[in-house]
Length: 275
Image (tube, rainbow, N blue to C red; front, side, top):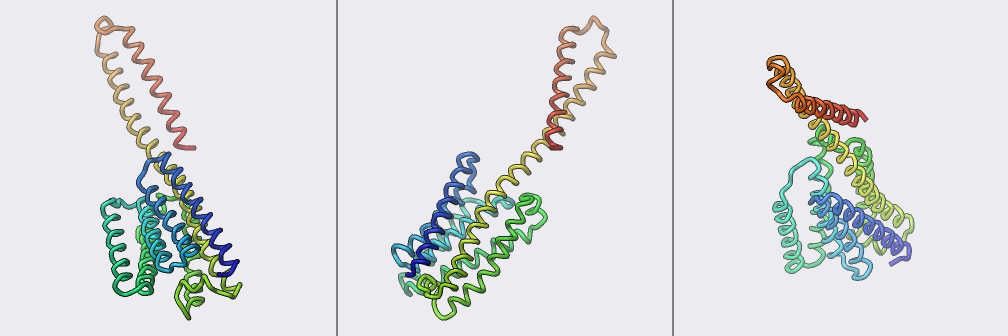
């Protein structure tokens, strides 16, 4: 294995470790299942690199790579589609069973090729599903869609090139390339894809949180406004129809003050909504 290839593998591994810690940080603060998917995905990507660097295993490389893509896709889709954990676990169980059965009965090469096919199918799902639900997808992720387009463009350019480079052998042969131009093109494509995906995940989380906060503020301000309007009408009714001796003036004054405080709070909420 060429030193340049090893250097790229190390850089890719460091990038995956960054992805792991970013996902862990989000999970600690948000406590949402999608970040568990991302943590597992980045760990799988990392193990795929380790499998090449230390074990020289094409089977483990494609196996962990395909699992990582499935978990990564599941995490991204949960931003705008409800996905049951049970469904994801069933898919993972089926994939693991298929790949290991092929490995045991038909050999490492066939199992590795099937792993690549599963990776590519999942990648197509990752790209196509948001486009099929484009309006909802764009509303949920906001300006992060720029990074999504960047990821797609880089991947669509990189995949044909990678197939051309590996046309005379298996995908695993790229780790033993001697041509530095091919090495740089192939591994830069992989690292760019991973980097764009990491940036996209960070952006989509912050934009999605902003979208939810804006939606929450809008709902609260609307509901609170309706409540205050009802209270105001009640005050006006009682003040106009009850004799002054039939209600406690101090209580009425206190209630009026609280109503004013609530109105001021509503103005502050609506001010946040416009910012």
